[in-house]
Amino acid sequence: MADRSGLRFVGFIFATVTLAVMLTAVMVVKSYADGVYSFDRAALASR
Image 1 (cartoon, rainbow, N blue to C red):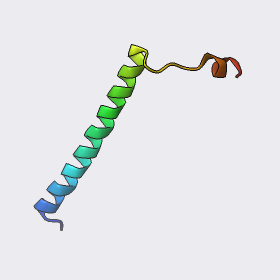
Image 2 (image 1 turned 180 degrees about the vertical axis):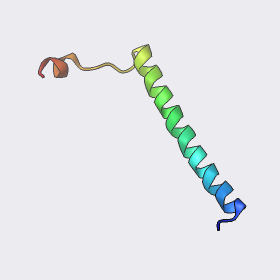
Image 3 (image 1 turned 90 degrees about the horizontal axis):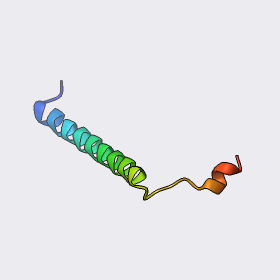
């Protein structure tokens, strides 16, 4: 059976990765909302 300190460390790693992914997603969505990124109309029209 795993000890508590090992589980605490693994939980901390998973929490850190989860927060980093969530922060990145929020920043990308905010950039799209602010108009920093935009879809290329020529690429969309060629489909």
